Length: 237
Ligand SMILES: Cc1ncc(CO)c(N)n1
Image (tube, rainbow, N blue to C red; front, side, top):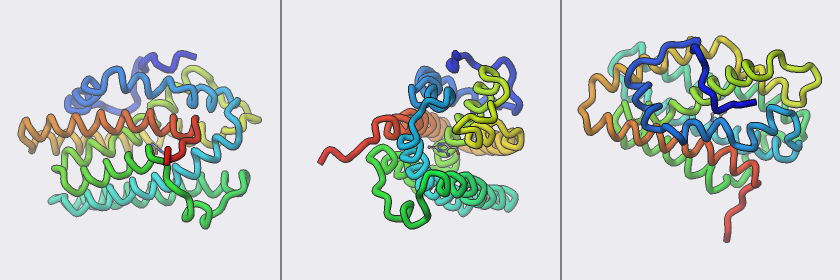
């Protein structure tokens, strides 16, 4: 399984500024598909404790993603954009919450455990980065900071589909794999990347540069998110 190989064709369009963000992230983008956590998850060899660690941290991560999308909704001047970000915030909580609910029952954690969870250093840093960019950055920088989250996972879902084919019925993480190859995300990606382009067009060069940096930083944090689960990261002191 060579998950670093790009897809031949994508099921959503990638406008020039999104392409420029990818170029900026470069090797980091590639590395994020190739973490040992991803391979173990795909092969079904990932142990349940590690998966649970990931899922619980991720539930809290997605709440922060929703916060960042909500903050961005308040910066939009076009009501269609405002609505889209509000929906994105809603989707992060509702749709992915369902995934967590299913695995929570299976693995033995509930909403109280999520609430009381101590965030890992990497998770906390990623959340802070998204919120900070959404709050203090330009619209294009805030949008760029939240883009790797859906993009990397949708693209990973499609690369896994290419390399694995149909999901075996007895695969321990079948639901997770099914979620991110769902074609409904393609429309979401079209909508997100079109907005990223429009906000980039309305910004100046310096703001566009900062947005690319915000994008790459989030890609780094995506790699680090796999890693915090893989190593069950703790605070050193
Ligand atoms: C850390 C992380 N990135 C991206 C996604 C995709 O929604 C997710 N659930 N978690």
